[in-house]
Amino acid sequence: MLLTLSAVLMLLAAFACLGSKLFNRYVAYYGFQSVTLSFATGVVAAHFGSGELWALAALTLALKGVAIPLATRRLLLQRLELRRDVALSTGLSTTLIIGALLTAFAFLVIQPRDLPAGAVTSSAVPLSTAMVLLGGLVMVVRRHTVAQLIGWLITENGVFLGAITLVSTFPFIVEAGVFLDLVAAVLIMVVFVSGITRRLAEATATELRELRG
Image (cartoon, rainbow, N blue to C red):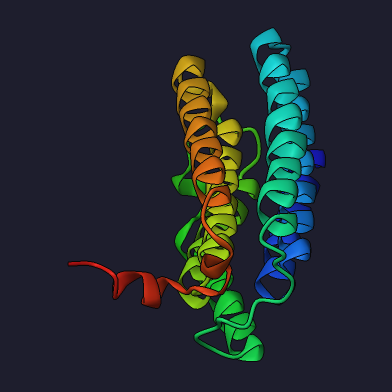
């Protein structure tokens, strides 16, 4: 029950990010989603009595719930003075409708009978799948590089939620290794983007592609 509730809150945070135009809210919603993810990991750890999962929950809270949002806010939003995202390829209402359709699609495709017997709860898997799709949608409809970064992070949260839901069928070392690799990649991206000049703050992915060759 608590894991399902956490998954629902994480999905709502993804929808909130999808429907916002303010950069600081992008980061706030992602931070809330990551804190909720750490709580969900703790619920699974208590269910299995796993010390490794408790350690993973602590790492999730420290890195994804605190460190990455703070680094993004200080190195990107404040340094580049990002306020409002105007680089949208579709309207907000259209984007939210597409997001709702993707969520319905996830629930139609992922059926409880298709899940492994060791799944902690069957309802969290379609919710995590919907979150992955919403994160991908954010990357498609938002053309600013920072907004696309947040979309990628939301997608990663969805993948991680699905992994802990199916923890009994996946080796812990694989989950932890992928998680830490993704965190390292995010930190590298944050440091790289933070060194770009103020002019890049107004650049979109389309404009960046025009710089090639």
